[in-house]
Length: 277
Image 1 (cartoon, helix red, strand yellow):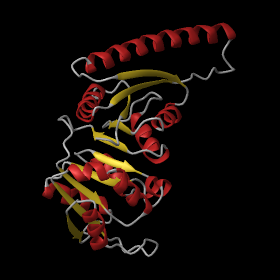
Image 2 (image 1 turned 90 degrees about the vertical axis):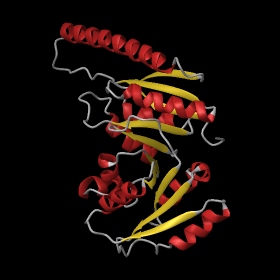
Image 3 (image 1 turned 30 degrees about the vertical axis):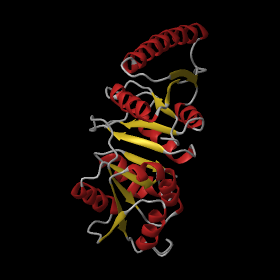
Image 4 (image 1 turned 90 degrees about the horizontal axis):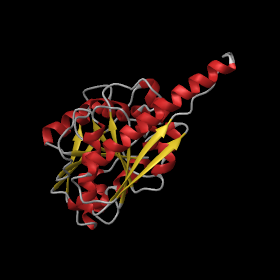
């Protein structure tokens, strides 16, 4: 795999974090890639209404807890990778976890991130990190659902196509994966949105044919207000192993307020999502 030679895996306290790290390591081994493990230590804001002595003590306690957590996560990272013959790096950053994860993602080819079932209570909230990295890093993100525990397979890939710029970006970022898949399905759920470009499954089929990728186009009649439900139901019917999706095609703000395809996919997909924006 020529395109993906350096993979980012953000580390946190999620119970499934070692599972996601193993899946990333398995992909790295297949592709001859390196892994970059990242832990971001949140900065603690010192409250001015504390007595200075109390503030100093709180800071010392916080630093001690963070040192312990950093060491524990680093050991866990190395323990998880010990059975894989791959190169790995580890970076501990300090600051806003979202900003740091997004920044480091720009120095890798693919971020492999888990999507926990429940948001964590500390600042290292992987659910938010996934969303901001997928949208703001400029690089593709492979999102592993919390219920997914097997190795990632990419023999049967589904492309969610709406003709948007984000969908085009995801398609081109995933071309190398699509070329190696055994079957590729194009799913079109036409939301009759006048602001969208006209969707042409046949033109996409012809484009992928020039890349030696044969596809089957499925135009879905929408039965739900949110097209995400229909798209996921179709991927289940087809036995898809991965979904290629343009992240937040309408806008992230609109999706967060109204609930959109990207949000629905992140929360309800049981198979990995390949996201680009």
